[in-house]
Amino acid sequence: MTLRALSVALLATELIPLPTLAQAFDYDTTVGIAVSLPRSSGCLAIANDHLAPRSAVTLILPAGESIDHKARVVIARVEAKLTEDCDVDLGQSGDSYYRIQLDDSAQGRLPYFAITSRTHPVITRTGISRVDIDGDGVDDDFRVCTSHEGLHLTIWSGKALKGTRRFHRYFPLHYDVEPSCTDADY
Image (cartoon, rainbow, N blue to C red; front, top):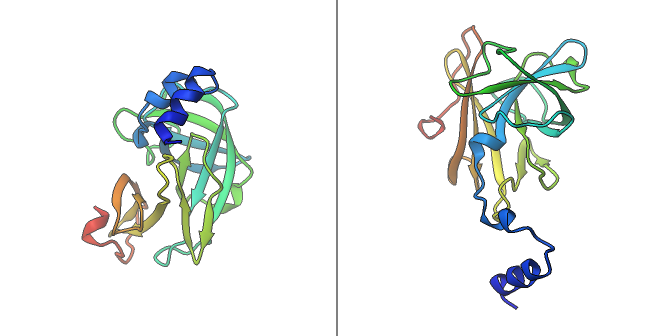
């Protein structure tokens, strides 16, 4: 049975709602960045103003040779949508801000990738974090590199720097660092 025939059969039995098959995956509204704050809370910036309270957010902090930290995956929950930014360094034009609950306040002020859709388990090996976010059968690689005064967070469909870049955000550090980014990161 072909995938199309299986989809039609499942639609006929109402096991899969039609909008699920018709919706295209959008990285900009599904992925944002977040930082942990004191007292087990955090701030999420994302181009999506419809996140429901208590919805799960997968936070991914990939390891990086250019920044001193270990890879981490943390599950957070949306507490509330905020009327203004909760961290001036996170957002960009068009973002919405959310207070999130997480148990990771010891990590300091490094930015996490924040995925608001359900995903397969995140695999982290040799410092590289991977998960198929969009369900296309190709793992997405998460990469963090440094420019002169900040971090570039990118997600690649396929291998980082060789696949297709799907997401990019900049996070300022407000101090000089040794650049590790390549031209492809920008």
